[in-house]
Length: 240
Image 1: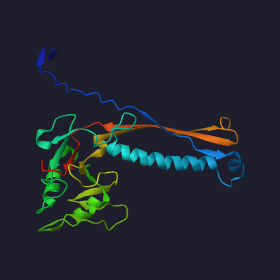
Image 2: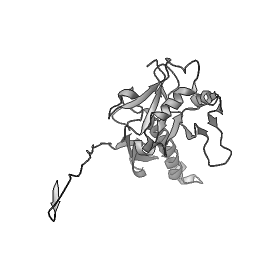
Image 3: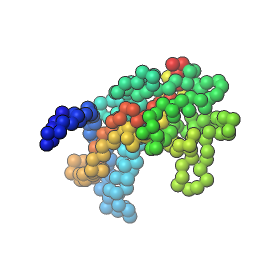
Image 4: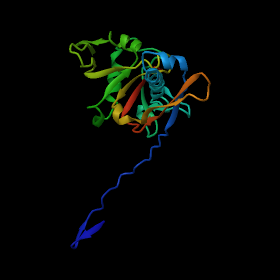
């Protein structure tokens, strides 16, 4: 507590702040082009190789952001320990089980998606979206209640389709439905996950190391990891 001009006031609470470490990792490629190609091509070979490397880097990043679990890559959203949501604790991901190993429940299939949505705290609901793969979404699109289908297609360009009133994002890096798979997630991923992307793609042109060829040493530095463990939940295709 402290006093101001003789008036005693209550102590101000100070919230604990956890330090989250998200290491930066290096990605690199070293494509070669013959000197003749570089000299004779009617297009910018270096720019083309940079674009191609960027596509490959993007694919690798996308997979790592979902399931990366090795020290040299970003750590994915599904690479952390999960626990039944009723027993959730910081540092773990809360899950809702479908009740059936590797499958949806035989009846009232939509109920578990409703449970998944309801497991997220209110402060994360405004920015929350569903995240799943194409095959799982194909099944989900067929779920309905007494009021109709829970998936609603978008009829306007730029507006996403919705599931239970929330946008649906498709990422085929999400695992296929199988025993104990985490094939559907729901949450505010802008608050849940941090991506550290440093300086974009850099290209070092080397015409000396390999005679007759030009090496385009291409690098990118990126990191990723969960920064808020309560900002999203996952659906686990398991009995419990």
